[in-house]
Length: 80
Image (cartoon, rainbow, N blue to C red; front, side):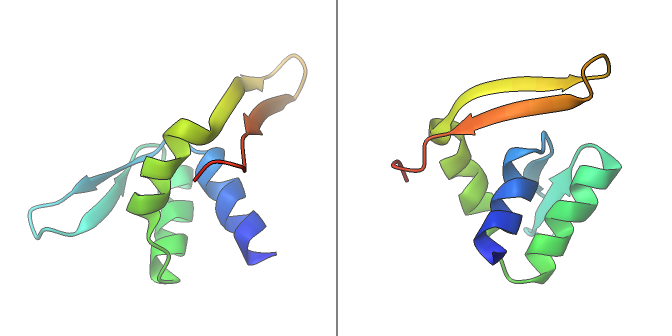
């Protein structure tokens, strides 16, 4: 269940991780997405490593549509 929550946060986020002046990984982007990434970081999840892995696993992505009220992301779990 924890893996599913981590993946849901990670794959449904456009926020990114940058290294700040103190050489720490810091989420940057939409406030809600940043807060969710910080939640993962506070839970000792290596978010920056997961984001690198994310790029090769996304097979299809459809942004949220206010008309249809959903978004879609297809992930290849065989990779990574």
